Image (cartoon, rainbow, N blue to C red; front, top):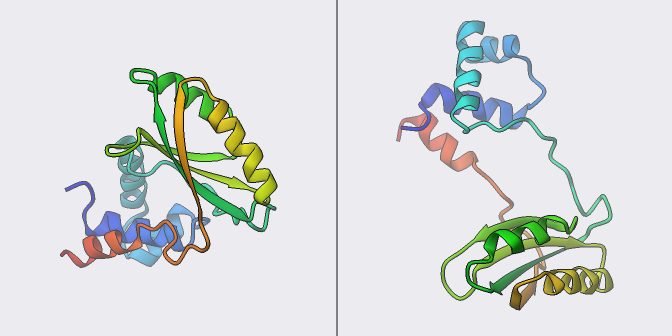
Length: 156
């Protein structure tokens, strides 16, 4: 198993309060400070814990529009397309997929006109053959891992 119940409880604690120190985590979990530090080190080494970035509200930062696009690309050119997409600041995520398209991207924009500018950049990337874009109206279930961690913490 990738994480055990104590790992899950530690990750839940840090999800709720990412600024907690190791000593406070140990106190709240009822374990030794060294145990918490060893767990954090192991979770980091295994790539499960990648860091503690702040949770940002992109809408509050002026990027109130989120859109998703499925891209069909020239075969064998994924690395080049991904490099071009990485250069577009508003492209937040890129996933290689199976099915209708080759890449699935999440992008943000300030408004519809700005989205058109971003889409033009995406479509202008070398080896992008076709796109299909959808605008997100709301996010009823935001990105989450809590249910998975809670299941592991319960031992189920």
